[in-house]
Length: 138
Image 1 (cartoon, rainbow, N blue to C red):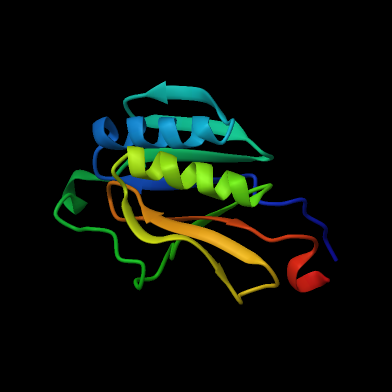
Image 2: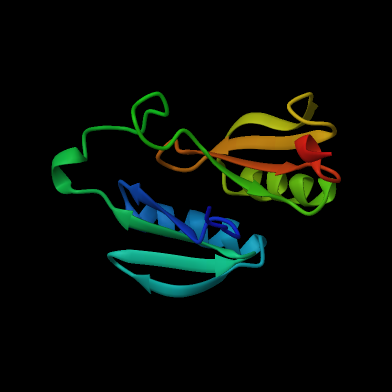
């Protein structure tokens, strides 16, 4: 049996670094993450015990768009510390003109589950949630 402490990082492939770096830099900095690398081929932020990287897709895939129902990533979800953090990041998403899939909403996914769901410039879905206490582990 092995033990882990979370996900170290996730790397997303994007169709335009020029469009996606400002989006992710604003979003991730709003989560108190800091930029470690920002060059034309790689952008990387760390904070909250994780890292998020983006890099450009290969030119032969430029005509393809993200599809969350294909094999691979379905969506990315960040865990917020409070409901107010979810609300604050919703405002950031609106300022970034992200496509809002679902505004901050409480659902029955887990006791007190509160989340917002929006898309990055490539249509990759990003969720930010808050679950009080231990959620399903309570």
